[in-house]
Amino acid sequence: MTYSSTITSKGQIVIPSDIRKTLGLSAGTTIFIEEKNGEILLHPATERFYKQSFGLLKGSNLTQTLEQTRRTDNLHERKKAKNPR
Image (cartoon, rainbow, N blue to C red; front, side, top):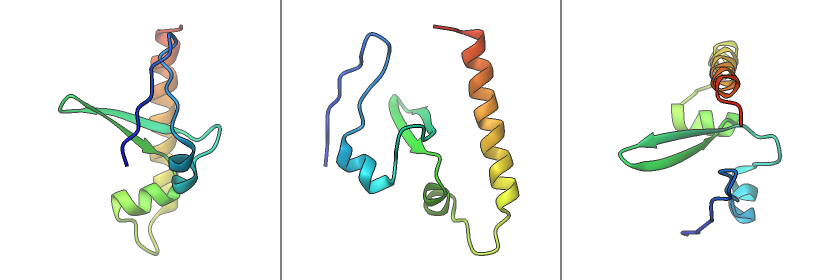
């Protein structure tokens, strides 16, 4: 299903509630934002997302996954600190 959302003056958008429920998103969930071929892609940083998107299998190294997530979060925080609102 396709939805539309308006970008606020602060650059915020609303993710429709049925999508949030389906993907298990709640306040505070980290969302990775990617620009690819002129499109904006949103990826929730959840275990479910990692399993579906990266093919994590039983016995995968969760420590490495957590470390990668933290590195990505730290990168976003550093960029945010350089460009405060």
